[in-house]
Length: 556
Ligand code: ATP
Ligand code: MG
Image (cartoon, rainbow, N blue to C red; front, top):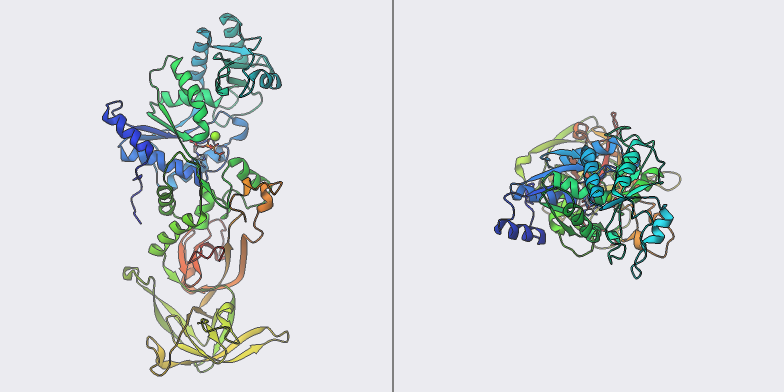
């Protein structure tokens, strides 16, 4: 896997940029990533981040981080800070940080310009009337009775709107374009609305008049000298309005809006509105729950920036809507962790094994490689003692089939990095549950196979006295349907929440060296999967999250 942060593979947007640069249209490329701080970033945003920052980097241009903060009642500072953290964590540095609210005064000035030209007016239709007047895709709209107000009256009313003289919803500023336009977005769209009583996270109580996205976005792009305003396909129908705004105000720069398709990922939902529901209804443990498709959730789950950037590259950038398989995301993290995660032994569901011919009170340190393919990662000692734990799943009393390679009563198996043991006796409690195995070991089998018989299996283990108790959280898909929000057979997409998306192994035992694991550090627990030390649960308790299984076993 490539370690470079910023190289985007070819795509139709790069082709456009190449052509424009060749034709001398620009001498430098400027992009921006414009999140609304009304939630945490999700993996769909990562696609947009890698695209925007990647293009800036590849063309030695610039990329700004700009908060689209025109909807103050849904936004807050926590989201602003979380978004900054996530962009940085993904490996990107913005050239400048802006808020659309930085431009509120300028935006107001441009609105006044439109009014002065007779291209905007104050309208008093209420929301319902506005809908009625707008018409439909097959029928033209009707002109608002307020459309013919004089410039002077409009200027005065707009000023009063800013001063807070009118109630919410009583008046809006609308562009005067064409109520018969085939594109509904061009039927006198709203440019400004009144919102009393919200404290904006950046501008406080200064404004009660808030600009709409379709007015704010093109002007913010132009003020910043953005050359390519990359956005998702749902804005395609807004492009004529984007261009109209810039064509009708006194600003020179006119960025080009280019749309690409959103990332949809199977077995998850990707809209902030839906993710907010999961958080607000306590269906997950907040925005950074390791099952969430948020950047913060993926980070806590143990994903790496390298894997997420690689994923963004592999899915590419096109104009066609599609749904990406979860397996692709999982393959990216598996490849990255296979390369860089140290190997350790951890027993998730311990079964005690007493090695009866191993001397009591004695122990030995056996070297174990930290990576099977990368010697530079070195070794660590693991301690063998008379009592060890193996996983319950690695023992069975009666061989079920020829393929079974783990321990069977009366037979042998190798303990990884150690000796071959034979199960001599199975101890059960009154209810018939297996509570312990009595085994014996063959002292001649350290690093050598016995000459006279074949040992088929190798299992992992930890010493009972030289291991640490841990909690291991096994995460699975949050939803049990590939397209939960498209399934018409259920009333609510949340009916597809997977009840088994978190299984906790409370009594796991991990090898002693793992007490030094730092928050967020990833490991391969041999034969189990990739895990990372949980970063959000402080304290001494060792908690590990499963990042991903070793192999793609979903649905098999
Ligand atoms: P959501 O629908 O999840 O609320 P949004 O588009 O409202 O997303 P913004 O914060 O406005 O979220 O998005 C910031 C940028 O990220 C925009 O340019 C948007 O087009 C892009 N983006 C959002 N979701 C996706 C996605 N699923 N795939 C690709 N880009 C996305
Ligand atoms: Mg948005």
